[in-house]
Length: 182
Image (cartoon, one colour):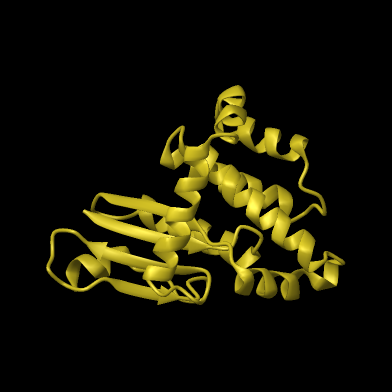
């Protein structure tokens, strides 16, 4: 089995494109692949995204607020299933990257588009477990020394070989089947 840790910036078009490429590779893999998406939210991420979105007139504080809420919303969705949460993040990114506001209607549309239960999603948004899960993800990113996003760490659990890390995954494809052969 292959385990993939995919570290993203929720507001980044590069992260969105990388997630789409990763999803296609997982679909075509000749092995069982488990993907764990980890939205990273920290000061450096906020600076990078603010720089990327400055031309749209979005301030750094608004970037930080939206990125943080998207990460929390992803964690709330994840409580209904990892694959649904990944589909939710893609649907959310597709919507927010074309909008200038993170609204309840935008979130509800993404929730409904992927088949999440909206009342459950709203309940999960308010739990203390959600914040603990979010903090655990941030700790994992620091522990794996993830500094460039999007990034992907790939493990072959059937092998004693080291994990392979791909920084700037949007520019460098992860070839899951080659990891199995390597």
